[in-house]
Length: 103
Image (cartoon, rainbow, N blue to C red; front, side, top):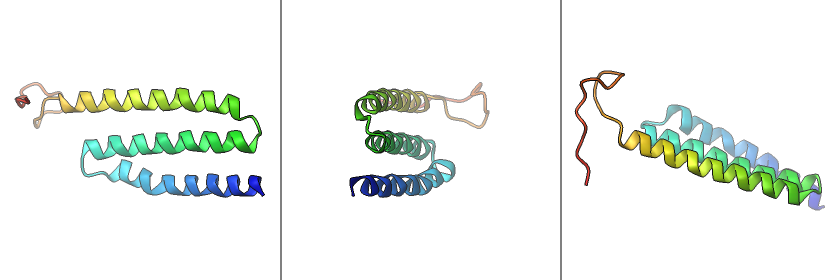
């Protein structure tokens, strides 16, 4: 009974990744794409925990999922910080773009 419930939950998480993947690909802004990537990483973390329960080796999968969640969080913060302070402008290299003043 528990195995079928966990398998159904894992399938539901995999199916919920697809709308998030659409938001990540077609997001109107860079920050929407970053949030979409973060959501996919969070769902992958939960999926790892479901797999741990299915394989009856939760302790190993908890360690893996915690490390993955930490890397996902740090990567999201780094990308958001980079794109927040990136110069805006028409040139892709940002050569002559003016940087906005932020408090």
